[in-house]
Image (tube, rainbow, N blue to C red):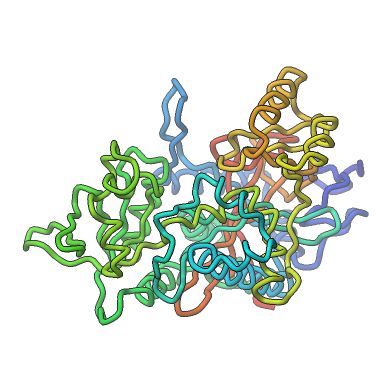
Length: 485
């Protein structure tokens, strides 16, 4: 532990073995953070508090919220936002961009293969039983063609920075990745809170994300639909990400619809409007596979559209992301992504995975059970920080519970070493600035081409010492500044 030698508000800023985004191990400020540090130090002590209050009010007035389920004190909350940005250099971003482009390209090839020829399974690069036992593998998709063989239109990949300074992929989110609205609204707020600072630091813009998403969706329209009608399908106002759904639809200038607003006739999808029925060509869906079509999947779903899957299978409507992409969302399949990249592209991963142990493998399972107090254990299909054990921060009772779960259903769990996520300066209640653990979720768009806006959602564990960055578990977000040079 290195004591802080900086003046207030950094007087409680302590360095440890984690990589610090702002300071080197010996306490020197990193070059790309120098302008920001100078700006903070020249402010009067109350100025940061005032700007934090202004940012919070802006989030409140815009209704930027998320939902936490199962809390008796209420579910709707203002999204927690930290005042200080996370800064990434142009060189670092170039590597991230190349690595994520490589990753989404290989995963789209993998999904097309497993739903068609299954060469990668025949060649035993990925175990067949791993795919067939995945709850998100949709046998109904076998032989179904999708536009441009593009199964993953929007991907949010979670990156962490290791103590060495290198980035690594923690997990992929391919079903209905969320959070991009917080990335966009955070930037808008920061422009007001730090006027002129983004331009002075030469921060690359991200405002074109919504336009890039719309163009990506357009490029995937069924053949012959030169002026496609695009809609965003939401589960409704009670969904945790409804703010994002309405925000993105508004930004793209497309209709926000629920299942009851759509109908299918002769394998063609129509939207009910005051002027009558209007054909729909592309659906950006924010509903899980199970609920998309009660005739094809869950019969009790009232969120989807009866007959939608047949219209999709007939090629009359595009679903983004495609049905069945969740097989690559599986945390056990994630462990094979480096091999998937090598198989289809003949390349080593530009950004490596975190070391991962599959509980379905006897030796890995035995090692994990003997070291539960040192490992992070995750359920393969959970997200949002749920279904997870962080060994060093767990009790013996919690370890015993996860031991039973792993033994009872090993396919459902993976384990990873407990990693010290990098830390970044964070404004703390009371006025000081202290380091908190962070990760990064860039958003990758894949259509006619791959597009990645320079930034992403930096999530921050606001609780001191916590490694859990999910908003549902006490985390928040930071604006992510990618520098132009």
